[in-house]
Image (cartoon, rainbow, N blue to C red; front, side, top):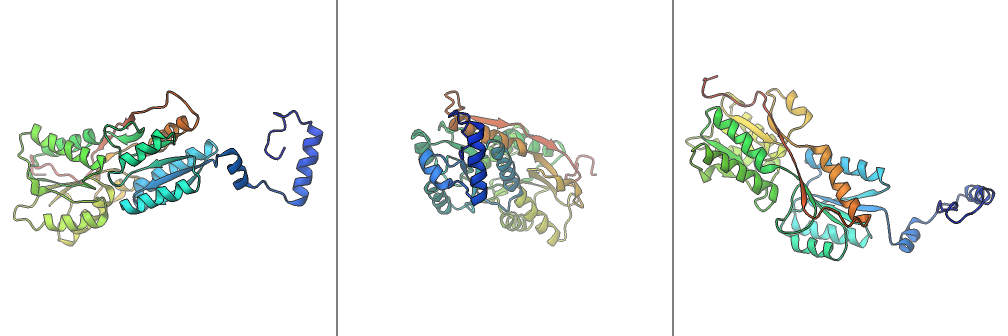
Length: 320
């Protein structure tokens, strides 16, 4: 009765009412820990993200929590701080807490250990970043196409010196975006200047420092393509401190878009991702594994992006 299975075991309504009434009188509540040990199920999902201060990951985490709750699961969240050691500790902690499955946006190249977890039958889903060649389900954006379209648009506006501030070099999202940027330049017949491809993480500090250095070049870039929203904030701060403005002196495009982008003094041009769908698909892919679905996706889902043009890019062809 206390487990909500009175009907299953054909317990009469009269007996059920008496048991529930007495439980309420004495203030009894079931011991969830004991139940989880007996059933070997905690209805808890582990979620490891690289940076909770990043609005993209914070929004995705909220969507995952909402979707998981609808299915009767709760989230245990860890912030790896873009640190492989903290990431490994977080996974170990979550496994020791007997989570039922794991959703993770990996920091480094720990694909083999995650693959071993999945091979052992433990449900795993990768978020935003993935490992080519491994059969771990993942949800990501069409990063290559999004970066390609943004760079191509800057080229069409007459920009030839386009800097790229990338994120973690080993992450799939950063690699695919840089590849899209490079492919667009090659297609337009623009020689790739490796000195304009900078950065090593998705932080605001990275965007700030790299933009400071880019603006000191004798031939500074006419446009900056920032591959993350936090790096875009850092770039904007560096441009303002340098006494320059967007887009009159430097055009700026961000990979990732949020509601505030259009309310900035200079509305920010961005590659928009389907943030809500990230959470929906991540939970669905994990739930398929938890439910024992033999048809659970073993590859991945890539969600289309959208180029949203605003006032932060300048047309050099017209001089406007």
